Structures are given as C-alpha cells and as structure tokens.
Length: 292
Image 1 (spheres, rainbow, N blue to C red):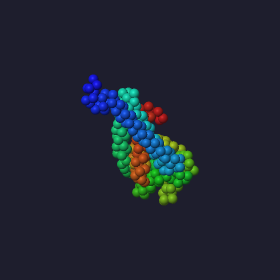
Image 2 (cartoon, rainbow, N blue to C red):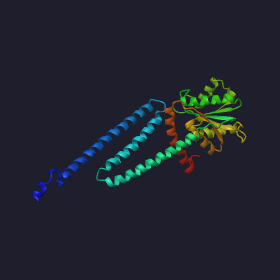
Image 3 (cartoon, rainbow, N blue to C red):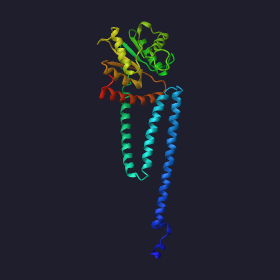
Image 4 (cartoon, rainbow, N blue to C red):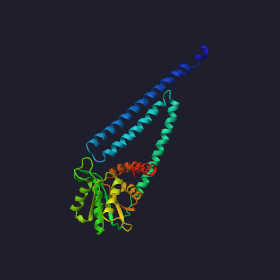
C-alpha cells in the first residue's frame, strides 16, 4: 500500500484532494460574502442618499427613494439566497432562489406590459372638448411645480385655440402648500391671459380619482354635465392612461391632452411610479372593488 501511494504525487491522494477542495470552497464562500457586503453597502448608501434628498425637498427624490429601497430589498433577498446556496442549506436555498428569479422575471414582464399601456395612452385625443380638467401636481408654497406648470401651459395652448372651452383646475391643499393647488393654477392661468369667467376651481381633491370625481360633481352643480358635453383631461404623458381609465370608471368618457414632462429623467422616474399606481388601481378598484 505504501509503495502504491508513493507512485502518485502527494497532492493527488484522497486526503490531499479533500483538503484542497475544502480550501477552494472556503475561498469561494469568502469571495461571495465580500461581493455581497459591497453590493449591499452600495445599495444602502444609494437608498440613504435618496432619503436625505427627499427630506431636503429635491424634486422627484421621493420616487427615487422608493425605487432605490425596492431594489435594495430585492438585492438583499437575492444575495441572502446566494449565500445560503453555499451553506448546509444549499438544496433548499437553491430551490428558493429559482422561485425568486421566476418571481422577478414575472414582475419585469408585467412592468414592460404596463409601460406599453402607459405609453400607448399618451396620445392626444381631446379635440373639440367643451371642458378640460387640469389635474393638480403639487405646488411649492404658492408656486406651481414644474410638472404642474407643464400641465397649465398645455391647457393655455388648448384654450387659445378653443375659445369657448371652459377649464376646471382640480387640486386641494397638501403638506407644505400655502394655498390650494386649484388656487395656484387659477392665478397662473389668469396671469397668462385666461379670463376668470372660463375657470372653475375644485379645491378638495387629494388624488387622481378625487380630482375627476369632484370635478364631475362640480360640472353637475354648474349644469355642465350632459351627454353632449365633451370633456378632456390635461395631464402629463405618463399619467394620461391612468387618468382616462379612472375617468371611464366614473362614467366620464374623457379625451386626453398630454403635457410634455420637463425632463427625460423625470419622465422615466414618474413612469416607473405610474406602473405601480396602475397596478394598485387595478387591484383596489377592479379586483377588490374597494374605495369607490
């Protein structure tokens, strides 16, 4: 037996091969842990940075924070399963990782479908409307945000070519706002030449569904709600699909007047958020049928 072993290099004996394999496995595990720590640290720093930007009131930072937080959580789950795949729980962890990857693939596919619907809905189809409804989008003190300004500018352009149209400005007063969004929009339009008699204000809404529901009630109070009256919703491209969908669920057959979003980065961020908002609406109002 001794002579037989001496005919092979010591490193190829079963015991030596076991030691080498264990050492290689330990190095691989250590590398995985280091990579995991680096990735999680980077994700945490990015999320923390977005959080402080959000607290400082940087535009669109709230969306960035929630997107970063979601990505950090998904990355954390994947890295945890990846590490477990190199432990004594390897078999169970591998099965869970496969399920998790399938879940992520389904989410990505669903996200792509929703983005297609959102972009397909960003078309101008509000010609010859008798009433346009401008949806609120936040103000800073008394000054309209850039997103809201883009909607108001689109409304002004529409009103300049549709001299008989009436405009409803819709939006309540939120945190950090000195006046209602409707009042801020009213002032903006009047300063740019729109007659006060053409403007109706809806000052109680806090979200898209309320914007449209309360505006419809205002139309009824003013005697403007009838089958012959054509209505169009003025909002940004990324928001138009959901806005018209909500209007339809309220019995309002509305066209759309898309406002151009100021920056491409803002549109990307808002479109990502809008996909979640559309899905939330489908679950709440179409599946669970709550909150109507």
